[in-house]
Length: 154
Image 1 (cartoon, rainbow, N blue to C red):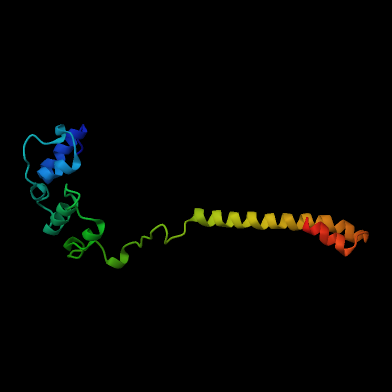
Image 2 (cartoon, rainbow, N blue to C red; image 1 turned 120 degrees about the vertical axis):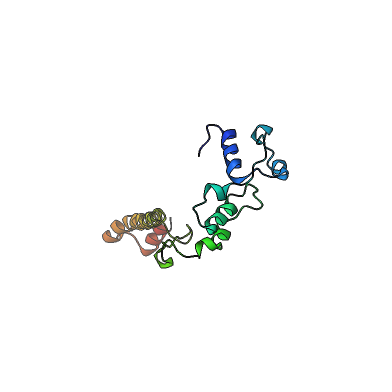
């Protein structure tokens, strides 16, 4: 039931959920144009008369216009709606959802592997560079051990 404007959308919400109390307007500091012309009583039960009482209770809790009284996802899960029969499915059939910090993402794994490769290739370049400095000189036998160490430490 989308409204054509923000004000119309607010009025549609108020007609369904009821007009907010006066303290709501003080907290929200909205323009007076958002206030409904009359006081509306909640009509959720009328609008969803074929729905079970537990679903009306859940909607009433989650659609409360006052943020102080509006339900959270955690409180919603404690409502009768989620534990009364008939359940939509067996609880074991529900997907397991991980938080981002619990589940490593592919991007993070790939980034970590890429960084490890870069670090190891940098080490190899340094070692190869040192070998290149040392190898021709030691093969020829023209440098002493002290000179080789001196070159390695540079």
